[in-house]
Amino acid sequence: MNKFYITTPIYYINDKPHVGHAYSTIAADVLARFHRQLGEKTFFLTGTDENSQKTVQAAQKAGKTIEEYADSQAKVWQETWKKLNISNDDFIRTTEDRHKKVVTDFYNKVLQSGDIYKGKYEGLYCTGHEAFLTESDLVDGLCPDHKTKPEKIVEENYFFKLSSYQDKLLKYCTDNPDFISPEHRKHEIVNFVKSGLTDISITRESIKWGIKAPNDSSQVIYVWFDALINYISGSPEEFWPADLHIVGKDILRFHTVIWPAMLLSAGYPLPKKVFGHGFFTIDGTKISKSLGNAIDPVELAGKYGNDTLRYYLLKEIPFGNDGDFSFHRLQEVYNSDLANGLGNLVSRVAKLCENNKIQSKFLKIEKAEFYPEIIKYLEKLEFNEALSFLQREISVLDNYLQDKKPWESKVDLEEVFNTLVDGILKIAYNLNPFLPETSEKIEKIYSQPTILGIQPLFPRITG
Ligand code: MSP
Image 1 (cartoon, rainbow, N blue to C red):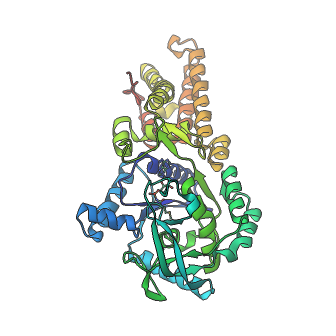
Image 2 (cartoon, rainbow, N blue to C red):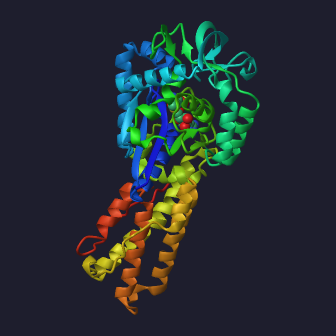
């Protein structure tokens, strides 16, 4: 049996989830559900990145101890995914002992490979990024993303010999052309690696919160070095290497340069694929706390439904591209595809079944499978293409219904209802990874002994 191990980034806990975070998680959830439905042994991991200075600062601001703050925030993230019907198999927190143990072992393996040395570090550190920036990254002396002045740090640190892995990384990319996706981002990364890698500092001296370096208890392991290892600490051993890391484009470099080099050094096989998706704006503006447009995905799903949120995000923006989240478009897509498309077909046919006293046990329903097109699109993470394909299948059935006019009773009703119900159930099966709640409802409607009319699945939104 094939296995499939998929991950999301682990999220910083200084903030509550916004719809941008939900995007990574929903995309991973669709794929996890798809692979489970294919019968593969699937493991889907998400979690929280807690050993960051952001946690320390946010706890101070909230007037809580760091531990209390981390516990309450981790709960917020866990509950958010539950409410959004995310089917993760585990949730890893980097403050858990199981994680600390694996990080310590991993660090020791890298140490044994001779890839860690002590040196002096001088640089500009941005807590927002949890990374060093160079002078050329700054705009007017500030980090252009966080609009904060980076801290000048001069410390004795331990360094990781990233520079030794340049050729091995390039070879891995050549031998595994699908390792980094999408293609245009792969070129960026390959060019970056070709331009020369420098060693990176992987411990911090002045920091107290985090996992202690096993070779020097005065140092704490760099939060990215620690965080990346969650993919190993959070999954059963037999699932490694990961089949797919879903990440945002902002953190693709960490996952396709530093992470594979760390794994090579520690002697682990490398992940099969890393996909860097795009970012979206909200009604044309960047998502930001200060602008107050950081939409709470739970609120949004409460208003429109979990399935609507999933559908809109994945249909509207080709995965891998940047895009815009617009309430106007959300309503348009909802009305055209879900209310007038899928919802209308399911209701109309259910009502006709009721009028004609159709009993499900007399229908000849084939066991549903994925359309080859859906398999092809989902293997390439082309969610929008998969959904457009299913929308066309809905139109085919709509046209069939319009053509046969079973309400006029001039056609072979048994054959017409067989075709309609069988077609709808096939579509529901294929939509299941995207719209799990709706798909389940549709299956229930058509498996009742006598099929009855229903309330609309997606009442039209006006205004
Ligand atoms: N903690 C690190 C990841 C460590 S993984 C070993 C981190 N966390 S984060 O909470 O800041 O962001 C995680 C992810 O959220 C980003 O990579 C990206 O996938 C997603 N997004 C955050 N804002 C987003 C948008 N505006 N649009 C789309 N995705 C966004 O980075």
